Length: 457
Ligand code: NAP
Image (cartoon, rainbow, N blue to C red; front, top):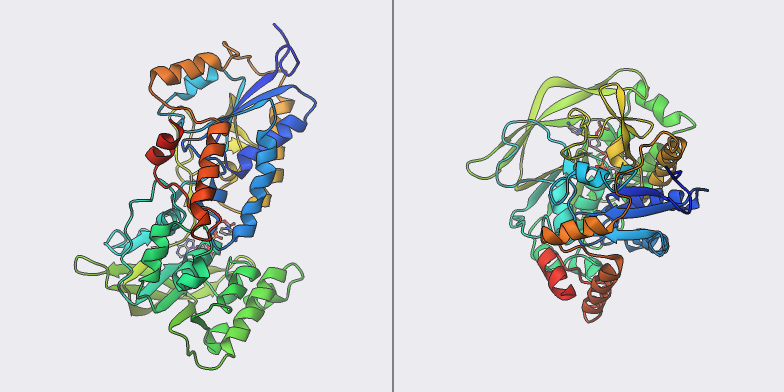
C-alpha cells in the first residue's frame, strides 16, 4: 500500500463547505509538507459561504478577502464541486469511497429560536432569512417581508442584529451602490419603518457588537440613534467589567453609546432605539404580529458571568415586524454525528466524535466545529488547527477504496446533478459583475440556482 501524502498517492481530502473555514483549511493543507488533493463541495453553485451570503452588502471591503480564496482555488491540486449537496446528492459513505479524510466546514446555516408563544406569527422572522434575502441567497430569494408598518423590533445585540437593523435604517442612496439584491433594494426603499428597536436581554456593557458597527449607527443619513442616559447606569459588576484592561471593545462601545445619549432630540425620519435588560416572553397578534410582551430583567452573577434574571415587571410594545437575531446553529448531515443541543458536529480538536470515540477520517472546522462565533479571520487559525490534527493522523488513516474523483463525477452525472466547477463559477461571477455595471453596483447576483445553471449551459 502506498503511503498517503506522497507524490504517487496524495492525501485525498474532501472539504464540505466553501466558506472561509473551508478555504483556510485548503490553504493549510497545501502549505503542508504532504502532497494533498482537495475537492471542495458546496450545495450552492457559488463559493465563499457567508462572505457572499452573509456579510452585509454595505460592507464591501470585508468581501475583498475573496481575492485570497481565489488564489487558493488556483492550485492545481484544488477542484470546486459546486451545486452538490452532500447527504442528498451523494451520501457521506459514498464520499468516503473516494477520500481519505472528509473535513466538514459547512457552517451554522440555521437560527436559534427564542421558544416563546407567538414566535411563528406572520410578521415574525429570523435574521438568517432576512440576511439571506437581501444578499440574494437562493434559499431566501422568495421570502416576502412586510415592511408596510412603522415599528421593527430586533432581538439580540450582536453584529448580525447590527447588520439587520442598519439595512432597515438606511436610505436607498446609502444602499444602491452595494451588491444588495435589486428586489431587496426596491422593497427597502418602499419601507415605512420609522422606529427600529434593537433589544438586548442584558446591559450595555454586555453587548456583543463591535465598535465600528455601533459607530456606524450614529452616522446614518436619515436615522438618529436614541439611547436614554439612565439606561447607561451600571451595577457594580458591570462597572468592574467595563474597567477591566481586557474590555477595550466594551469601553469603546460604551463610549459610543454614551455619545449617542448626549445628542439633541432626534430630527431624522427614522429612530434607532437601543434597549437593554428586556426579554421577549410573548408575541401577540390576531393573524399577524401586533405586540411584543417583554419581561424586564436585572443582572445577576459575578463580573464577566452576569446573566439576565427576570423580574415581575412586564412591558408591551406595539410592533409590526420582528426579527430574532440570537445566534445560529448548524444543520445535521445524514451519516455524521450531530450535537442537537449545541447545533455543531461533536468533535475533539476537530476530530468528529461519536459518543467518546473519534469517527475515523472525519473532521470539522469553523462554525460547525466551535459554534457561531468570531469574525472571518477567526476561522484561519481554527482551520489550521484542524488541518494539523488531520496531518498528525495521516499514518493511521485508512486509505479510501477508490482514490479517484472521476467515478464520483460519473455518479453525479447519472444522478442528473450538474457539477459547477471553479471555471463555471468564474463565468457566473463575470456575468454578475457585468449585470451590476449599468446600475453602478459591484455586481447584481443571480439569486436563483436555475438562472446560474441556465447561464452555464
Ligand atoms: P452573537 O454575537 O453571539 O450575538 C447574539 C446576541 O443574541 C447576543 O446579544 C445575545 O445575548 C443574544 N441572545 C442570545 N440568546 C438570546 C435569547 N434567548 N434572548 C435574547 N437574546 C439572546 O451572534 P451574531 O450576532 O449572530 O453573530 C455571530 C458571529 O458573527 C459573531 O461572532 C459576530 O461578531 C460575527 N459577525 C461579524 C460581523 C462583522 O464583523 N461585521 C457581522 C456579522 C456577524 P447574550 O450576550 O446575553 O447571550
